[in-house]
Amino acid sequence: MPFRFIHTADIHLDSPLRSLSLRNPDLAGLIGDATRQALVAIVDLCLEEQVDALIIAGDLYDGDQTSMKTARFLATQMQRLHEAGISVYKIRGNHDALSRITQELVLPPSVKIFGARAEAIELRHNGSDIAIHGLSFAKPQAPDSLLPKYKPPLPDAVNIGIMHTSLAGAPGHDLYGPCNVADLHSSGFDYWALGHIHQRSQHTGERTVIMPGMPQGRDINEAGEKTVSLVTIGDDRSISIEERLTSIAQFERLTIDVSNATEWRDIVGAIETALVEKRHGTRSEHLVGRLKLVGNTPLAWQLRRDADLLLAEAEQRAQGIGRTWVEKIDLAVQPTDSTQSASIADPLVELGELMQSEVMTSHGFREEIRQMVKDLLDDLPPDSRKFVGSSEAEFEHFVDDLMTQSGDEIIARLKAPAREAQ
Image 1 (tube, rainbow, N blue to C red):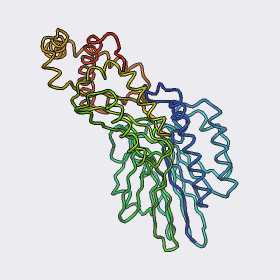
Image 2 (cartoon, rainbow, N blue to C red):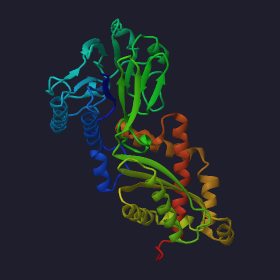
Image 3 (tube, one colour):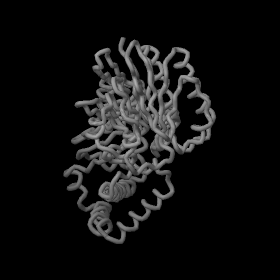
Image 4 (cartoon, one colour):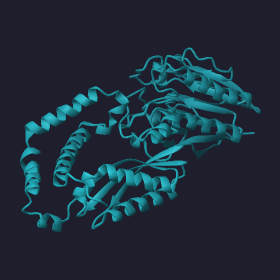
């Protein structure tokens, strides 16, 4: 009879809201509870599939947790697995190493948390030998490869290794326990259950190496549906992998072309159509969309001026679709040529052109804006800083976009101080 387990990582239980755009209290409530609901979905899947084990490859917690509500919730879910005879094997990742409740929480005896020294747990499963290897982070930093610290694979056993690692590195992720995929393949382990990188990847070859990604995204930078791996190791030591959906709320970016839209209702209709199409293609229970409007339209100035009204209209359409949310609307629209020609004598158009050609291109002005953004980032927690990008080039591009959009919004508000009836 095969040995079956669920492999997950990076749940980041009760992670604080990371997006400054989640000002809708209902949406904030959904996202704030999503990591808990994802863990419940994982436990439900374990029970439905009657697996033998759940493997958590680090970062079950999000950091310096002090809430015992989190502890009680986790203990309840682990007890459900314990009562079903399902074992849990967990290592601590870099975020778990910061957690205050990691050491204090009392869990059922079926939950094995590996320590800072490598261990190998030997099992006998229907006549087959299984060895599960694990090693936890003792400190939040792990600049060197952890692979040499693992015990050698047990002869004649199916060897499963659990490791929290950034592999060779990934955008937006610091370097933790770096190692080479080729070294994992040649290590003699049959299956490597990895964690840390939030995007799923699968490295098959002589051995099986899986980075499952996180089971629930927390903001638009963790977009797409999220899954766990259902792993089956056959009596002949063959390994099969199935992806199973776990994300409750799925973030998605939607680009909507509103070129040649001449009436407000055209814009709103295009938004609704795009949301309906994306909702039909979304398997997660909830869709959370960030909309980007592009194209040339005579409504460009009005859209910028009445951005709050546009968001309210979009949220209303999303609510009518059901289980659909609008997190933010980005405007990358420009006035049509006819609008520009008709307004050639408009002093505000001239002011806009002056701002773009003289003010926005001024080195001193750009440096002031750049420093303001950096000062803002210094006041934010690390996990909330990623909206400016993960590299210096992405940061500079963000500053350029911010300056362009700010100039357009100033002119839009000056052009029509009183909101026109729609």
